[in-house]
Amino acid sequence: MKIRWVLLAVALCYGFSVNAQSKSKLSPNLVYNPSFEEFRECPRKIDALGTLTIVDAWYQPTAGSADYYNVCGSRDCGVPKNKLGIQDAHFGNGFCGIYCSKTDYREYLQTQLVEPLRAGEMYRVSFYVSLSEYSSGAVATIGALFTDERVGDTVRSVLMNKEIRHLTQGVSQTVSSYFEPQVVNDYDRVLTDTKKWMQVSGVFTAKGGEKFMTIGNFFPASQSNVVDLDSLTYLLPGAYYYIDDVSVVCLGCNEPKIVDTINVTENIKQVEPASDTFAVGATFVLQNIFFDYDKATLLQQSYNELQNLLAILKSHPSMKIEVRGHTDGHGSIDYNQRLSENRAKAVVDYLISKGVDPKRLHFKGFGKTMPIDTNATEEGRARNRRVEFKVLSM
Image (cartoon, rainbow, N blue to C red; front, side, top):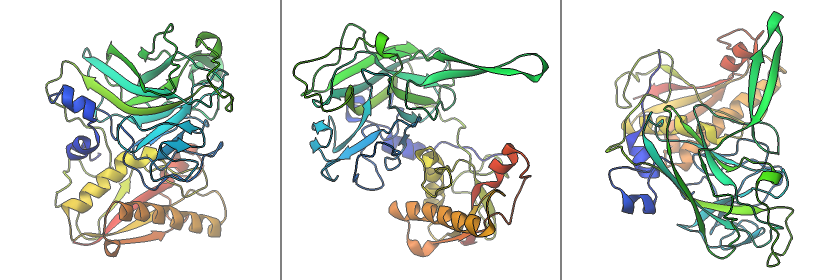
């Protein structure tokens, strides 16, 4: 059985943009960190092959490298001036940037919503974009896609919906099709402004259960209404847009619904963060901690689970824990030992960056010495690659 809860306090802290608050106090923004103001460290460089990992609650779902900018950033990543253009934030001090492109190269931003969307309810979606003056063109069809599960790929092109169809005698086939985002900027309204922020918005009715939002251009270049502009400097090989101030608001919901969405352990059912269940010696598996392949770099998909762990530590101010890393059976003993230690340390470093006293935290790696499932299957290996925390004292 699984512990499940949504941290309403975190949702209220990260889930409101100024625009949403002023328009509707009864329907909060369902987007964590909507203006990219919460981050782990100031951005330092634009990496064509990089991964967005420093902005709380946001990540890139493909190999297309989304970028982060902030007033505290380096010359490459500053606000308003940076390597890819000049723009003040629409709100606050930071924003992200993605290629929506006049070619088929694409970058996307993805996040998990505060709560799943409710069936039959109407939602208003809004975000702001600004075209980099260094672009070589502009497009129209930037939009927002809402899905039940995370969508992603290893490609750097248009994100496609890949469906596995099972045929006869164990034969399967992968069929790709274009996603249909629920909200898309109008085809005839090309997003050309490099000075001001342009709002992309729309209203749609949820089918229910949508938990993830992905922002970008889901259409091929031939269907994106690509326009070349004399005012652009043509330094970049496509249409590059800054993104800021994202909002998803339920139009008919009077109050946020607390739903069961986030896992902390498989051992106990319905335990609140302040519960006495966290006794000395108890060990809990963090179910949704993700790292780069063969690395100790935390991915933003880990954000919700890390917020749960922070809530536990806040609810138990004298609790001390040991974060424990484990790997699967692939690789040498020494390599896996180092990897597990570094991954456990990455979690501890994150907690410290969020204000947890380092004296309350220890970390340890166990490599591949303590499997909880077989290493003969991918499912088993995935369970063995895990991060736990053990309560050392209360």
